[in-house]
Amino acid sequence: MAGFTLSAFFSKNRLNHHGPMAFRRSASIRTKIFIGIIIPALILICVLYLDYVHLSALGRSADLILSENYRSIKACHQIRKLLEDQHNIILTGIVDHPRSEPLNLETVKDQIVQNLQICQNNVTEPGEQELINKLSATHQRYEKLFASLLRDQDKGEIAGGSFAQLLSLYATLTGDLDAVIVLNERAMEKAEKETRIIARRAQQYSLVLLVAALCFTMIYSYVLSGKISRPLVRLTQSLSTVKEGGGRYPQIPVTTQDEIGSLTEEFNRLFERLQVYDQLTVDKLAAERLKVRQAEEAKARFIADLSHQLKTPMTSLSMSIGILVRKVGEAVTGKYRQLLETAEEDCQRLTALINELVDLARVDAMLKPWPKEVLRVEEIVDSCLKPLRPQAEEKRVELRVDFAPDLPPFAVDSFRFPWVITNLVGNAIRYTEPGGLVTLRAEKRGGRIYFQCSDTGRGIEEKYLPKIFDRFSQFSEREKMGAIGLGLAIGKEIIEQHGGDITVHSEVGKGTTFTFWLPMQSETEHAKSSDR
Image (cartoon, rainbow, N blue to C red):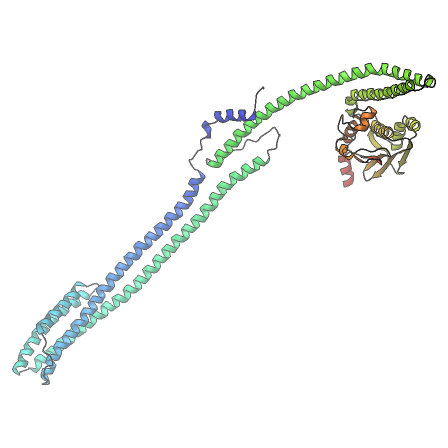
């Protein structure tokens, strides 16, 4: 056991357990939290990516559809305008109006062909290709007839049948152009509706995914918080049962494989080390306690032997000097008489000291509980005060007893309790000057009997009061009287073993009052009677 310290013990065990200290990271709390964050984040990233892809594709598709339809419509309007310009040339010639600005018919023809090609290249709707083909064929016939009529007009010869046929072709062309325009406009309206539907559907999908991500995050957070908090709560509850110096420590079950599980394992190892250390400490304290008890027993035996050896010769010496003082004291005067009186006082002090030593030898017997008997307070006090009354009369101190009339019998240790009364009243008489008063009172308050021993003596200084019930406590008055300070300590222990308590109040020059109480029955019996 020599040289054993707690720090060295823990250091040794820490080295021995260094291997298992490595945390098991298969499912750490950090990993769980990271998973709980990364999964919703990935879902949100997917939502954003899908929205971007869908909206981009939707935009491109809408742009493509709308631009092709728009180019076809624009080309048709351009063809109609060119045809009107061509047609106006024939009409102005018929009504003999001069031409305002000569047109480059080849350029107009090329522009019409180019616009027809634009329509041909932007076919998007069913039936549109047939209309474009029909327009191209009708335009070719129209151009041939237009060139023929234009030559006849220059010659001044215009056949009515050819002009009527040109009007018919012109009407067919404008009708087909209107049909292509209407077809593309309807396509544009349909594309707009479909675009809105697709956009709304994309919003719904995004909302559903976002709600799913939110629900997943909430559910996962709830489950994760439960998985983290439950082991911590169990660990806290187990730790709350550990009491200092209890000697028994719990083995907390390890239910997780994360940092909390590792912490629980470390607590279990710590409890094992504490249990071993407590056992070593208990063994060491038991050995020290045994040594102290053996030393106390040896001291008690020595004091008992010494006091018994001194008591007989001291009694003889005290009697002899007392006889000398009474018989020879009147015959001698001066210094010799003073020496005899001093010797008598010293014998009295030595006798008191030897009696204290005898009391010290009887401490163990006084503190061992004896069977209790039901006695009346008056009987106990009378038996205690009987040997003290002569002392009070000899010292010319008045001894007064004041008992309440309704004091009932109560259970008390008939061997040890009278010693308390004797000690308190004896001390009061000892420390009270001649002509003083010592009063012993007793009364019943509730389930207790209160005793009060007061005197009009010299009192005790306030600085000595906190230690007055300690063993071997010394102050000037006790030293003068030859006391070693055991009576009050023994009396307090006897009162506390009866379940009571004692207090003291003192003023220098006015006196001292000791107040103590004893229960009329045990605390358990008192509680039961109160319930009844």
